Image 1 (cartoon, rainbow, N blue to C red):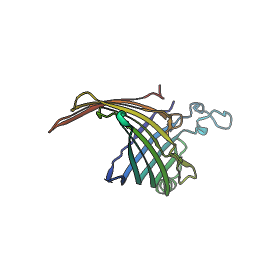
Image 2: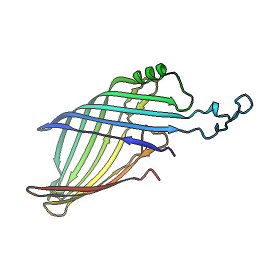
Image 3: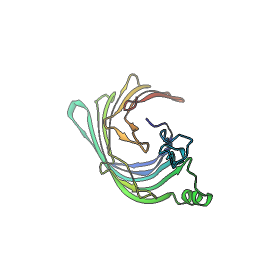
Length: 231
């Protein structure tokens, strides 16, 4: 497995008017990890030894994907008799992406100007679009809600400065919430798909549980999450 540092900030600003909605949703994924060459470690003459340290290919990777999503969404609700309400909706999103991709040898050093040039030219801007669909069922008393969300059904891809592609693969997520009282709600979400990250061999499929107390003055929320795709 690969050890890595991962930072994933995000924020949201949304607006809903009737059945239409829109907003701006910035997010980012920043990963730092290393490939360690554990074969070429001998302190020997490279002419005589193919496993000499002179051939070591250890590299440090710094990769990032920043997205700004601007969706235009529409949804409708339908009464299903005495059984509750079924709501369906979808969104078409314009996506502006900034990618950052640096691969630097750790031991086989280059001159300072070459390293600086690589760092300065590691970013790339590109644009695309995504498609989201969702459905949610609520009981008549509004205590139980069950939802299903499919994000980025078209799997948008964004180019990097190195010529590779970072893909936002389609993601399917299901969840349910239940109001124990008017103030206390419990919820459970799970990713139905395993989603790739920028770290090779490390996939994400989150199982999340939470509880919220919504008082008149104070709201308290807490939860736990587990990546069930990882060891």
